Length: 441
Image (tube, rainbow, N blue to C red):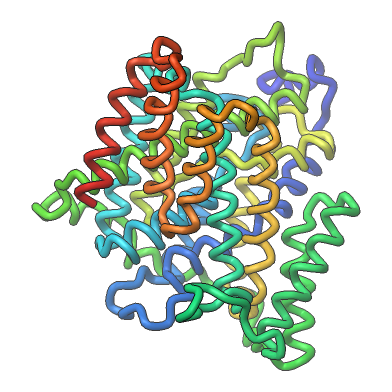
């Protein structure tokens, strides 16, 4: 084992790898709660129960997919990088594809499956790099920031901090509401942990908020601690139902698949480079086994969609494990084992309400918006498409619409500026596709 993972070469040992893997798990364990709540649209009270995904099945799918993805990444790519359903992508799945577009969740899972297959083919054939390189850096950064704003908006909405206002569309919620106050407390305590550099600050913030909620009677206490995992049957293999439904084959669903694909591209590439740099694994500006890491992610997405969850992606929270000493794929295996162990603690999820998870969404949104600092806002031809990409996501409640508007504006502003030759031909193709999408969606 030590020889396979090159412990001696990388200056690590079992203790450091196990500690690093456990630290990574703590830092990203919130997804075990946030993902089921998001995909089952728990914050949407008037959504038909018959059209919701099963909460328990999503919990199992989340844990199993995270474990399998982390195992593949650790064993095959040998990186200390853990995987799980991506925040932002799960929001797009639930709030755009299912809630706004009205597509059955089985169709959304099928779109995730197809995007995973495409991702795998593009990575194996080398086309993936060409597509990523065709998209300007400013738009990649704007996509990440826009998703951050969208996630934060969803968090504020589910916490009751932002509510409907007939005069202004949105307004501030009732700050005298105990549930809203609990969410505000959660936001403050989570921010304190993160500012103080606590690696698992998001997870610990949720735990403290839940405990405070139970003390004041705002959160129900769990009836048990350990139990058998919920049934995976409601979601397992459900995606294949979509392939026999003619309504699945639409231009709108094609744009959904492309959005899953694009966002997964950006998310994985950025996270992989960031964590590998931190671990000192980048040599001569090159990332060893990068192809294997991307293949691991695409396989995990395919497997995750079959079990019943949205796109699996690399987690930047893995950096907390690296900070704790992780340097090899053994740490990712450790993280995966903890996700499997978490399957038997599902009763504890009863204490996790919208007020408890909202702080996690808002804080993660803050972290994602940091990418705006690297956009050259002084160049107006770049600032316009970047701004529209970012702002249209929360305003239209759709990640896909934000990407579409930004990708349409970019060639336009560059042509007017006289920089048409700097735009990759693929971007013109994307612009046409998304323009058709905007007028047919």
